Length: 237
Image 1 (cartoon, rainbow, N blue to C red):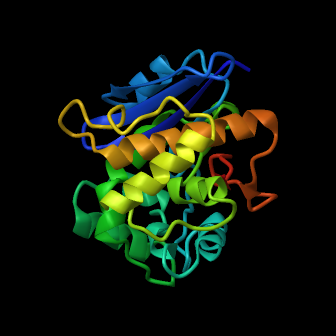
Image 2 (image 1 turned 60 degrees about the vertical axis):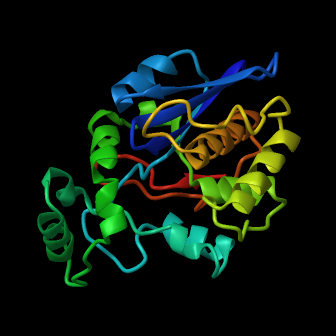
């Protein structure tokens, strides 16, 4: 194990943080699409990505098994950051009404999707188009708030990630856990379409990628189900 990576979506595409576990050096860059992410992380052992991987064909309340488990861990103040992913039938939709209806029509539960969920639909589509069970050995789904939950000793961070206090708390935790050289200056956006919280989330994902390599990360649920394409529906932290 030498190179690990964490990836978080942003308006400009994807923030990719890579760290050399031997030297401790880390760097970040922007990838315009997920194919570019795969290219930039070709030398990484594990790539942890903040995006749903593995989708239901029929909508159920609460989403996949990993989604309510993540909400329970985060508690009432942060549970809302984990929203149910769309069903696979929505990936061909280009408008919110179309996607919401496709989700609703997928089962008798009649569950629509949120605007927040629709906003990341293009990125879910990007990943789903290239993901295979074999590739999933390397590309793992994470949720940044769960990563920070683990960084914080099993306690959810209650400060909003876009607040000044929330950014400071998350930065200090990362500095204490392998990102000692990370500074407030280093996580300042250097280009349009990237925010500080995007970089911090990608760093937290990178930290989790190393835990996966070491065998110390936690997978929820412990025995995840597979979707109709054979992809595991799980989250790591």
